[in-house]
Image (cartoon, rainbow, N blue to C red; front, side, top):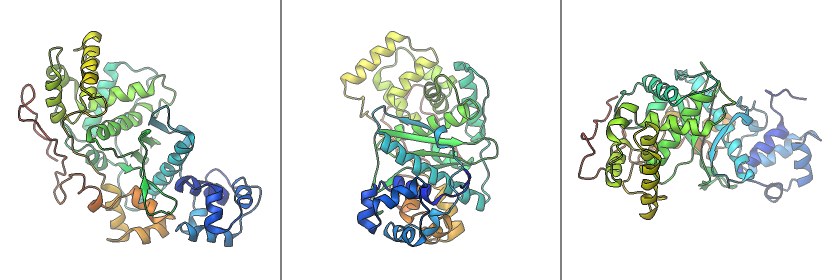
Length: 393
């Protein structure tokens, strides 16, 4: 029997089905391989024959080596999902498979390109106060080489420069040529610790502020929970960390007051790239908003229909690191040669590391410049004290 770190063709076959969203019946129709054979191989009840694995590989446009490559080093039961309670188990399993393959590819690509591992802080304290979380968010800004009291113009690029890879999760269909995504999940992340690979996966949405909060939230898990896996309230801690990272305490205490109207929050959203609802929570976290004022603001948000769609558009960010490393290693058209070397389906690789022409450019990221900042769409009037200037990188 293979060890936990060796490839089991049966387990890899199940991973492939999860990855592509295929049932045993689907695979039978595509290849003629019987469902009983598939089931027996996946449960290690019989040894797979290479000719049938090859049929499956050809039908799914997957390199045959996929079935024999060592799986990801990520213990999938340790993954922390930011998701809705109604997310199905089947979809969550599929996302786990996608993230596991994304991590495997990221480990190999960053290692081959000798890209540095992230120098992000961490904590081992059994319990964390709000002050502890604020301090760790400040330390993280230092690690990401960000100004201590200004907006983060492009969080994705800051993460990537620091060695934290970012991958959008877009699930290929069974044919591998179109993609679907889910609104039930938001993000997933893993970091094994000092000197190891870190990857944040997120589901790109239609609102840039929500994507940025998801990235900050997942970064919070890396910082707060890598060495504290049994924290009592990991999601609440990660949310508070995200608010503290995106808007440092000293600015929140100045800019968010109990007299600030929703119009004022909209102006702050334009400056800081945070949703109005996240800003209200941030004001409460630093002690500037009491419970009654917070509830009143949320009632007003609901009355205006802003719960799901707020005013002020925050530009969407797009990752670039994995694509850049792929082209460095495999040329300007990397998907086909890289898919063979990395033992991954080309369409899946394209989802993990999207081509900038269809990702970064389309989402408003300026290409060909060092700045690469997302432009928040601002209203004509400025927030209190004027909008902070963008951070130069």
